[in-house]
Length: 133
Image (tube, rainbow, N blue to C red; front, side, top):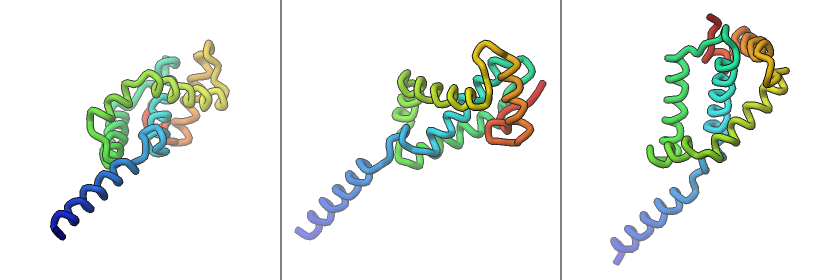
């Protein structure tokens, strides 16, 4: 009887812990990290003089992935989140808002270059993922 109650309590506790985990889009670390990656991606795509630091970018992405795993998410759940068009749109929207605050204009490559160069010079997390050609 005690053994069965103990097993029931353990199962209830593990179920409650799984239910209590933070949604990936609600994890500030994960969400902010993805926004940083999206900003860097927009800068490098729209400025011919900026290129990614591939190994650093890969390492940063891997770190985010591992943090999501530490929150209790499976590889399939993480991949589904990363592939979600709604989540991609939300992250791109946040990245676009940040870039607009930095003076970036969509049809002005020079504004992307200026913002990217500023990030690199200030050694921000975005700048660490980029370099000038």
